[in-house]
Amino acid sequence: MATVPKTALKVGDKAPPFALSADGGGEVSLSGLKGKTVVLYFYPKDDTSGCTAEAIAFSKDAKAFKQAGAVVVGVSKDSVASHDKFKTKHKLDLTLGSDEDIKVAQAYGVWVENRMYGRRYMGMERATFLIDGKGVIRNIWRKVKVPGHSTDVLASVKAL
Image 1 (cartoon, rainbow, N blue to C red):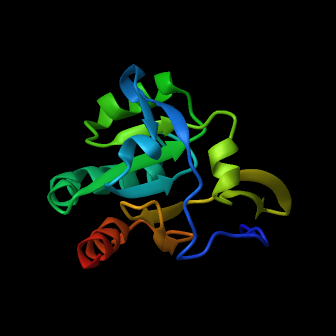
Image 2 (image 1 turned 60 degrees about the vertical axis):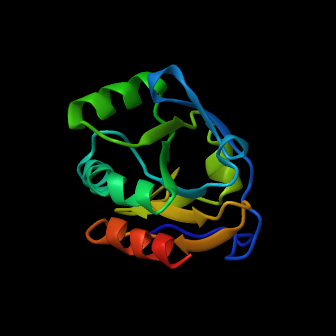
């Protein structure tokens, strides 16, 4: 069970700026996406079952997100090399940002304490932020359940 930070971001807040190394040797930043709707989703680890299913779902809907004017960016603490392998293996059609120092995860309040089998550890919460073209958070999904999530996010993008 993850605990949400007391100073969690809320709908209507300005999205914290970020600049991350991305798959393919590129970079992705909020300022570089200014004017576009951004679906920023955080996930625990490349190539695990839930994270793979989530990435495949967002990729399957990539064309619809693009038609709605949105860019999908997945973020984990995995390296760019790991992202490249993950993206190639599953033919993913989205940008993956590497947050190895977890600064972006901390800014978004998704680096949280988890508990499993009585053990406590820090990890990435599966969460998604919908950010409008002006950099304002328009929707937040926390403790995401993967089935149907991409469809729900797409509906929110289209409703903007």
